Image (spheres, one colour):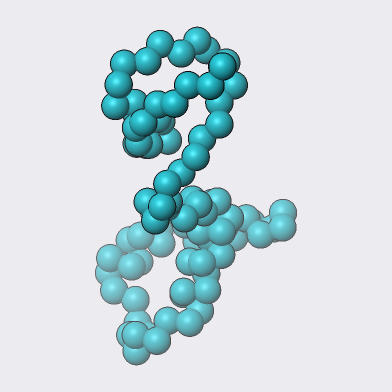
Length: 89
C-alpha cells in the first residue's frame, strides 16, 4: 500500500504537515518537487579544497595578514588532510 505525506525538510529531517504515525524502519520513497531542491551538501574534503583554491586565487590585493588573521591561524582552526598528508596551520 502506498501513502503520501506532504511536508518539508528541515535540518535533514522530514517535517510532515499532517499527523502521521509511521513505524520505524518503514521503507519510503522521497520525491523532491520543483526548484525547491537545494544542491547537495559538500563533504569536509570538498570544503577544504574550495578554501585552498580560494586562498590561492585571492585577488583582493591585500597581501598582508591582519592581526585577526594571525589569531585565527594560531588558534589551530585550520587543519588540512590531503591524501594522508597533514598540514596544520
